[in-house]
Length: 339
Image 1 (cartoon, rainbow, N blue to C red):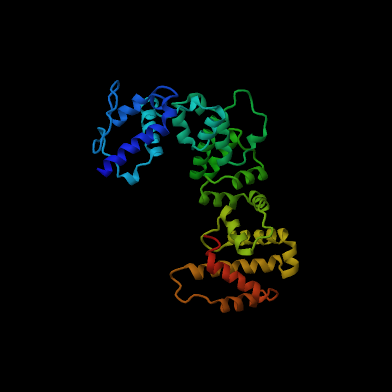
Image 2 (cartoon, rainbow, N blue to C red):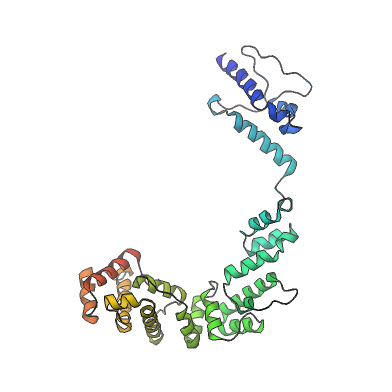
């Protein structure tokens, strides 16, 4: 009996709370009959006066009273009726700025699928321009006066095709970009393209840079190592220019170029710590060997911090013991510099 009284009082409270919504208009926003149908009352029939223990009929099982909240019931009924009548939101009914913002989170594949539903929005040049520049940050064609009828959607398809071609054959890939007018054959332009692109295969890229040392020189100058700790700068360097798997002339060339660039970006550190390109060269090799020693499962007896300091200072005597100790701690905590 107590539970029946509680439900009667709760129904009256719901009617008082959402009376203003029922007076506003038809449906769940204004017609109490619609809500009455949801609550089990037939249209045109006055709801029975509740008595003690008399419960209004309801087609659906009720929750336990402690989980029944008025606002939740109203929002649930309104959301269900809205889905039945309207379905999903039509982006064309929204302001253009909002629709473009929503579609800007899609990748190229999803945007092509969306263009099948919203043709005007899916072919918007602003969206495809953003996709091009977020994937290929620099292309020579970006800085040219674009001809009438230029389409960033077609440009995206050509950039994707060129990247796939490069990953199969680096020479044919670069030739494709140049034949389409996307790139010009200049070391700085090619270096910027490589520096701002993440879709190129690193193995093919390593072979290409080994053949084009002029592009490699320009690519090194694009790095800014100012105020970076040496192991972190070396990781950033090998993130763009992948290290070879074996020691050889190409690895020595990379470390030599990195050493000169690191010293050029940190003149204060060179003066205070006593670094030089030769000293950085020695430290880089020490960091690579230490990385292999600490991360390789085949090495059972790991190098200690004391051993690393002793071996490194034997090769670079001008470097302080504290600085070398910090190098060891960085590799021990963060990991390989060329992973």
